[in-house]
Structure formats: structure tokens, C-alpha cells
Image: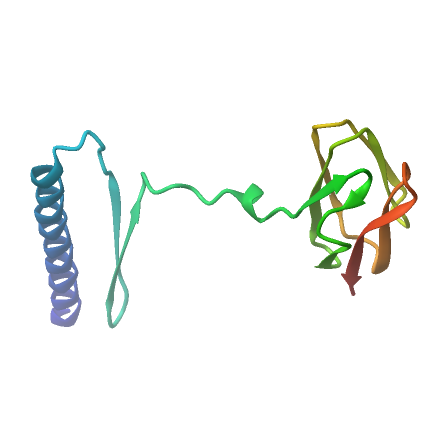
Length: 154
């Protein structure tokens, strides 16, 4: 019983230390710059049988934008300016890439039989499940030129 009480007191002390540290740090930020940016933090304290774990997350931190990781294939006169893009996925993944073109184009993904128009100056999303393993060619039907290769591993 005394052991559980000790653990609870240690967890409570850890929470107090984190909260005090938060306000001390927050006070330094406000005093130094006179900035109008507010910072909100979420503090989570979790007591386990032998240890206390504290994590914090800045709610005003920029969210990770999944679109940042989306490959973009840029076509100039129907040809990929960076050469043939190689994309690799596992079965069950979501295949996602974008195509942008300086002239009207039609892009076809062999094997998946997906075809989309890519208007001049626009970016078009290609997003579909990787449910067929193998290697698939992506080509511009306008120029009949390969622009990407999709490899889906089993």
C-alpha cells in the first residue's frame, strides 16, 4: 500500500515540476520579444508500475503536411524534366503522386488502367490503392513517353 502511495506522490511531484517549468519557460518567451504569438502546450503524465513518463506536445507547431511527401512529376513538352520517376510501394499502401504539365496532357498507368487528363498549368492527383504487385509503367499518352515506373512489392 505504501508503495502505491509513494508512486502516486512521485507522479504528482513530476506533474508539479512540469507545470512550474512550463510557466517559467512561458514567462521567458513573453518577456523577451513582446511577440503576439501564443503557445499552447498539452502535458500528459502517465504513471506506470515503476516509472513516470511525461510527454508534451506544442499544439501551435506546424502540422506535418502529408502532401509534402507526395512526389510531383513535372512535364515540359510531355517529357518529365527530372527523368523517369521511380516510385516504390508495398501491397496495401496507398499510391499517391501528382503530375503537372506545361501543355495539355493525358497520363495513363498501365496495369491499373487509370487515365487522367492533365490540363496545361494544372496539377492532378493520382491516388489509388497498391493492390496489384509488380512493375507498372506510367506514360504520357500525348507524347507516348514513359514518365514514371511504379514498383509494388508483395
